[in-house]
Length: 444
Image 1 (spheres, rainbow, N blue to C red):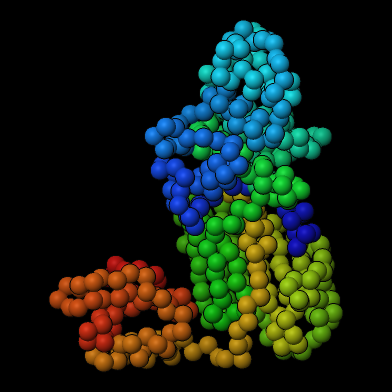
Image 2 (cartoon, rainbow, N blue to C red):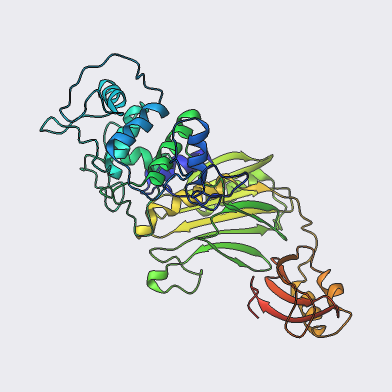
């Protein structure tokens, strides 16, 4: 896996600036609740006494942040000494100003400079490019000596911000949008600024390890396949068949309708099982794979407790994993993405997904009988007294919504089974399944 991560960094891509957050405790600020994009960042920084809100109990995540405010937050985040007796050195930063010591400390540290006219312009709004330079300079991160390729669609290798954007990309501090852009000239909000500070601090606290963008992703648990993995449910669709699970990010700009091919802006991760009919040992199995793909780069590693082989085609943007479970089964993972603007983020998303892949024991000797099972359930729709009996044949069923009083009926529950990918409308009073719909929905 380490090899895959290193190789992916050599291909053009980036990391997410904004990850969805889930509340696990009461929010500190009334306008940054658990479902807010910046919840984790704001709570983290407030707990460390790095940020403060307003007197009305709000944080103002969508408000612009200026150079004075940004400087204060940076000095506190990276523990820059502000206790010295400073002299004025900017004509627009006076000792009477609340931000005086923070600006002077930042100037002495070197993470801020004035403009050519000698001013600091404390009220000027901060841009993303400036934010990256100030934050990474204050954090004393080790930057690359040079940039040899474009970092994002809108950050070219010759741009002054490229060296900072490269670090941010490689450490998951930033992720390009679907067009491959980060908009370095955009003015920062308090929330977006807090997110960059938070991610940078987490990276430094973990000795330079990439920020875990998967922290609040959804966990997919295999029903018929022995794995679980996190994925960003806002980006990836799931296509399940009796033999595999496909995580699919379609190329909407080119009207992609199938995961059978990779389009310029699409990506997919497919998980399946090989029954290893030859009963080959891990060594023989892996050697066979190497002979099939002689031009690939190979790395053998340990995944969970199992031997595994990675097959990497960097130029083709393909990586395959073969995980040898035993002489009967090999778990195979096939990942690929296109060469369009999405290529700036697709490999990072794939990398993060694979880093969360875990073994989940299932009975692989049980034949898939989902079609037969569904046929039986469908025959008993509108048959009173049979509803729950049929639903109980779906071990993974969950209630996704309840109508306390249905139209012309009693309480109605909507049960969804990921294993068969159907939702069933169930009326309790008559113990009857009223209807079915493909997929996860309560719209009947």
